[in-house]
Length: 74
Image 1 (cartoon, rainbow, N blue to C red):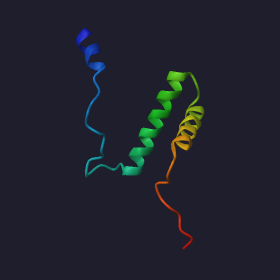
Image 2: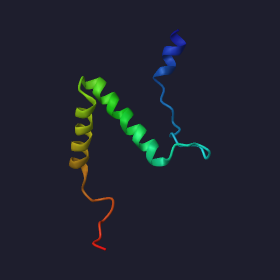
Image 3: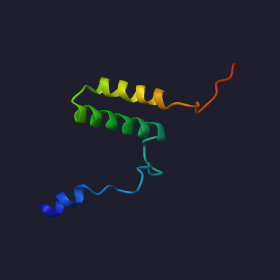
Image 4: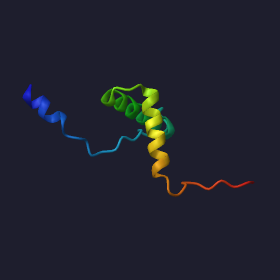
């Protein structure tokens, strides 16, 4: 049992990427990761998933210095 618990703290170094034959697209994988992060935040802070989503949005707004893409009027 202690061996199992000892391995729980070790993070995997490999990123999660879909396999070639996987039915999960890149966008779906990102959505899954975001939802998992929201659930973790909700559990850790004792808030709802909706509150965790707002927390992530607010943090993202605070950190945005330069947009990833520019919009054109075409």
